[in-house]
Amino acid sequence: ALAIAAATALPRLRRPRGLRIRRRLRRWSKMSQRATREISPQLGELQALLVASDPDTGDASLAANAKAGLATAVAVAPEALQFALIAGAHPLVGLGSTLVVGAVCAILGGRPGMVSGASATGALVLAPLVREHGSAAMPLAVACAGLVQLLVGYLRGGRLVRMLPHPVVLGFVNGLAVKVILAQVDHFQHPHGVWLQGAALGWHTGLAALSFAIIEGTPRRVSKLVPAPLLAMAATLGLATFFMPPAPRLRDVVGAEAFAGGLESLRAAFPALERPTATAARAAVAAAGEFAAVGLLQSLLTLQLVDGLTRGNAYGRGHASQECRALGLGNLISGLCGGMGGCGLLGQSLVNISAGGTGRASAVAYVLFVALGLTCFGSLMGAIPVGALVGLMLAVARHTFSWSSVRLLYGRRVGLADAVTILGVSLLTVRRGLAVAVVVGVVATALRFCWDSCNDLYSAHEVGGSTRTVDLFGTLFFGSAATFADHAQPTASDRAFANSWRRRWVRRTVVLNFLHCRVADASAIAALEAACKAYLDLGISVRLRHLSADARLILRETTQGAVLEERDADPQYDVAASTPVAIKPSQLQANRAPREETIVVRPAE
View: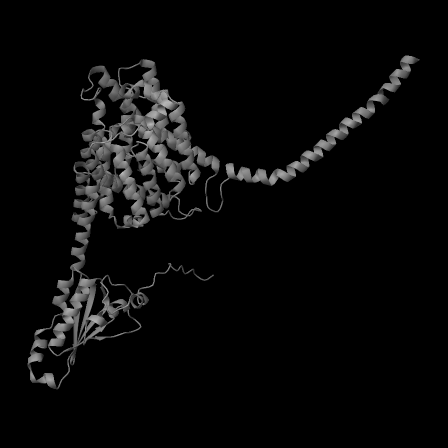
């Protein structure tokens, strides 16, 4: 009886406990549902930030930018080591300079998605300086170049990149590619001055060829997952570790202690400043101008390219002057830290954009990954064969060279002057330097343009009664002033009229029509004054028709006796001439051509 009573009472005792558990579970479920409803908007925003992309602008997510930064860091790190070797500095100095310049330009630069760091152009400029005056002169040159770039940025000189002719750019990049190839010859010597021979030469050449072949031959679908430079470094490092060839490695060139990682690597990447000699300081200041010029040129060309690739995203067009200021500040800090400076990297920016890096987060992530590799994987970098870096630079040279220029020259699709400009700038880049080549190319192209423009001025004469109309076509500037004098000078009939009795009774008028001719500068104003004076001395009236308001205002104070007609069809443009004393600046400003935004007229629905 007791057992039966206990068995029947046991379920009654357990039932309330089960009810309590179910009630607690139901309460917890309601609480979790309420919490999910409250934090779901925040989770959605976090997911959109990390994974989703903007459907309107196509801007990549934070995760995509971080992945792009990793791919860019893998491509930049080996090249930065090689650039430092080209410049004659410690390999880790290239990584330290990449960290400084890359971080400043990533945060303050004028184009999100653009990558900056140690470059081949800067290394080629610094190499002769370091070779002749030692490494103490390099930081001074870089810091002075940073100051020059800051000055150019604050003066808004970044807009001058628009004046670079296309043949000059083609010659510049072709000469740069040739200089990169020639710089690899020194890496077939170990130690410096002793050429590699026998098995060492064979392994060194083979590793360079293997690295080049992997970088160039990796399928695109594979390189999207793993960057080709990383595959090349991994393959050559694996062969060197397994077979232990006699080919030189980075630690053999500069010492194994430099790749210990941690603070030792940071000390090597940011060496202490040394006081240069007076001769070295003068040479560094002279080299700073060329370093600043080539750095600005490559950075602004890279900015234009990235603008074209990311057209339509939320950031709009890049700001050239802001990029100049950021680059100057980065080079100034890099020089004060003993680095080799840098500039915008064209190929690496392409890698970043193709991997999905369109925002500043990609450039910041790239800098963080380079810093991680410098401090934690120093020993792995030291084991990289020098031949692998040679193959990497050969691939960079191949992509730097403009193969379209060869097709243009071979197919004779450019004029003789443009062909000479391309070849001449390429030769000067190799023999005399990058800045000299660009300056000579720009000056030569400008002189050729002036020569062509001064030969384009022509006129049409129409005589009706006592009035002769001279219609001018072209541009009147300093190059065509002498040609204008031939077109607008008094004729033999005008001189005969001045010496005849008809001068007292008949009035003769000459009309100079500038509807299709632009008066450009002070030489054009002087030529107009001389023509008007020649006619007025002969007793012939002069009427100047269809001049701009700016030109009329200047000529009204300098030319007495000529009639300046004002019509509704008069063109609007400015004249690059000095203002007469009688004209107030506010009066001249009121007649300037308008500076307005482009108006887009959309068709009606």
